[in-house]
Length: 223
Image 1 (cartoon, rainbow, N blue to C red):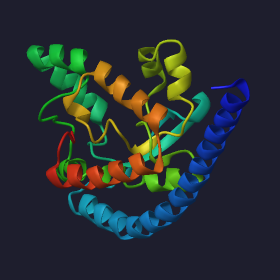
Image 2 (image 1 turned 120 degrees about the vertical axis):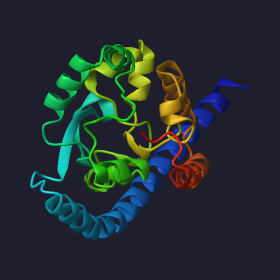
Image 3 (image 1 turned 180 degrees about the vertical axis):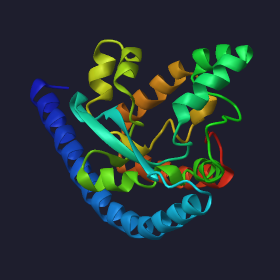
């Protein structure tokens, strides 16, 4: 291919990618507005459940994450743990040596004692992520993209991989989320997330949306 043809091809790719992100953002705004409408009755239901169980703390909590270009964002979730979760965790780990070793290795606990009854339902159905439609509407996140990570996790993305990962908005769901999620190693997660960033397209996004519905219905990998 001649140099001029290579330049034209590169410009076309840039134009198509720009158009893709414009369409993606338009779709994000539309879907997030619908999501927020459905969020309102869900908020009432979760609040009523917690109040009747004697828990009057906030039903929301926010977590610090890395957004596009490394900017800090705060993502919203329904609270799925007891208000004094840190105290409960400390006591649980102190009393259970085997579980303590597992937790420090994986940062996860099977049958986590901190999770509330409704929290288990919210997590199993992924409804705990529903408030992130607010993040999508604000532009902090996209419907489809790599799942947002805490600042320390960027160390798992070496060199150019970190810049590549942070070049797009994090997503409510994504390629890794429908390809194993909690059933994958972190190294596999990195590769799956980077695959999406390199190959994102309207067709791939549609596939991820379809598989997201199937994954939620099967409750596959949700913990």
